[in-house]
Amino acid sequence: MSSTTIVGDKGRVVIPADVRRRLGIKPGTELEVDVRDGGIVMRPLRRVSVRDLLGIAGRERVKLKEVEDSLAEE
Image: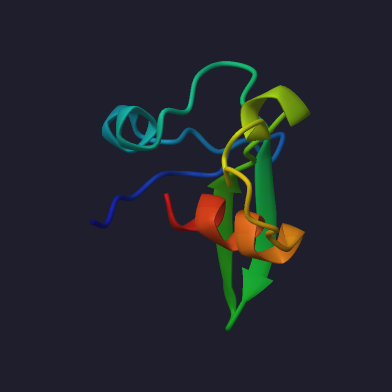
């Protein structure tokens, strides 16, 4: 999926509505911004509370990295 947008006077970029809907981006959503291979990559930050993680692994011991990787795949 590719879209085009314009950088405004103050450096603001409007993310096209179809992209916002697809990624669940709403007003106030924080975005992570990276520079990679001469381009800009933006992705919504996922905030996960401890309560969200309760019971996720049952009685098994799970490394935090495994949980983070699993959440990143969604």
